[in-house]
Length: 595
Image (cartoon, rainbow, N blue to C red):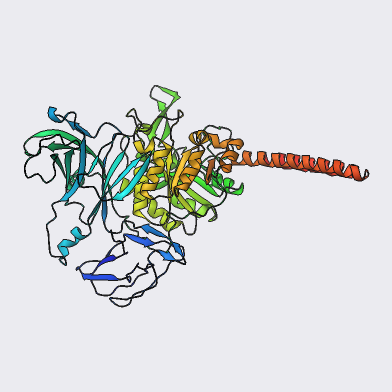
């Protein structure tokens, strides 16, 4: 890592100017300018994220200023990891979500427990200043471990790697400028070292290797998937088993360049719980007689007018790659039966298979993501849920969709739309898919994301990914990826209120969602326990109920005041009684007006 915030810059000319809000601990900030015969390429490893950052504009190849310690400004330390600028991130994951990742066929190793270590191979050694050596200089390999009991974020591997555990997610992260030409080698070691040690072994217990070429990802045409590799014995001519490797390739966002001017990725000002309007003024599919339909401009404005600080809505893409605001992954098309023109048949169609214009022709009330920024006032924050398919524990898929968009393309389109149109509006992303959360964090540095989790519940089917199976492991994931926090299911929070304080003690922001939030008593309990955000429905009715309760309280207080005054001056009581009646009449008028 570039621990002193060193920016490696490859430029065509010897002069460059840009905002550089940094200083370096015991070292002055500087740029290394190298004539690569190509465009400027800057890798940011760590950077200061103060809301009012320091800056300098170098006009010479080298500018030396010592202004204190890196990350500390006005006595406050704010440092964050960088985002992908020109490099690609490859993640290789070994986990027990579907089945054990390692399968051994050779009998002598059937009962063995293994340790794994990933090695980067195949990069030829060059002179340090040679342009062809830059990919090697900028390629890094780290490992992360995640479980419900905790996490160990990016760090170097021990000499013989780690053993695999059923409850733990093991993930290798590679950052590289040359993602298509890497040789990745998994080294397998017997943990108990029962294998006979061969004279000259560098590592006793070494029993096999599995090799993966990064070009496999290019040839598959997918940035996300699973590959199965044979494990070869030390003799290299005998297969002893296979390893199932889950991979994810994250590329820099296209057609947009982030800078260091402002970042809210980990910024949160502690305050009383924020009220967030679910799909605007609330979900309406289950309430057929609701006057305002969900996910419409009218719904968002209604929630805002009734006090919502944020409105929550879902965004995904149409077939022609237009960002749309719509909750479901599918919609229904009404068709006439062939031999019965009076009978109609509803056909369920994935939204991704219809263009934006086709969706507009249907009775599907949707709006484009860009239009919503123009139609809703800037003071209303947006909690944007990035809609993605989920796989359940039984192997089935959400909306029966096992394939979807390319994840990099999907996010590049939506993120670019938001980054270009948001202006000063408060934005918080959220998603149930942990890989989407990871990519959003890596692709941009401006807006935060919350990991949505249903936790342990009987209300929804259990998800396949072990990172999604409990609120505890969701916390570990959020910490490991250094995202803003989690959006937990209220069903589990009500049974485990201590989760709120536990997550917050780990530096996480906690929102909550679910039908239980529509109950006033539940919301009060959650507020008392310090919840950061409440996502709930039926704003007009809830506000009316709150107004009714307030009026009742005021009426009771007024009657008590009348009684007290009666003791001191009897003549006041009739006048106060008339005032009380007027108050009740005003309350009834407001009630009827709102209804």
